[in-house]
Image (tube, rainbow, N blue to C red; front, side, top):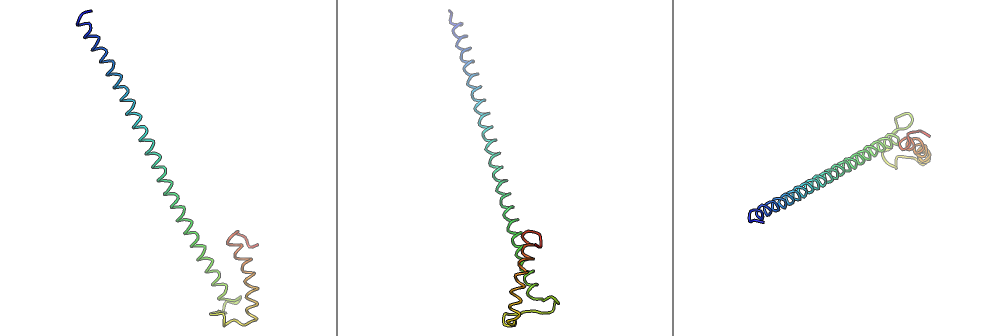
Length: 124
């Protein structure tokens, strides 16, 4: 074996080793970029989920406010008018004992009719 044969073998071996190292480097870089893409997808998904949760909470709060306002409006209109629409009670002192009994009975009917309608959508 001559000197040039050993130099050619060394050069060929070095080239093979360098190609293997370059191949491993490409595989590692591809794995790193895939991992980064996966983590970015997961983070974006969590961010969207948090945005949806906050929107859901806002909708729930808004619906509760609307329910409270409608409930208060119905109670106010019920207690501030009678069947003819002209009797108003400004305080408890304005109500006679007989009217208080009637109001308790009427409030029971109010609960039965209106609250069932609000919660269950029916008058029964």
